[in-house]
Length: 85
Image (cartoon, rainbow, N blue to C red; front, side, top):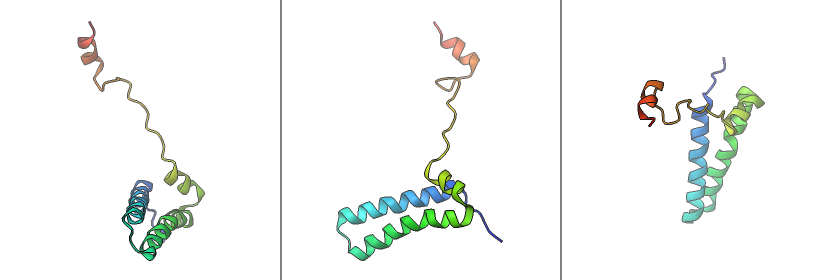
């Protein structure tokens, strides 16, 4: 039985570990700490690939763009008509 992890959750973890790797490098933490964080960053896409295939990795690394709101400023059409001068 395989349990799929939502791509958004895996993406958050990947971003957090990437930021931690950068902070550890800049802060001058020991090399083994930076290496462990960097290897974890590399292991996340590998685990996603093993669990869900290449499509899941693509979704992890390149999230789908959200459609733009039709109202511009987020107003309903009725509200938009009131603001037009």
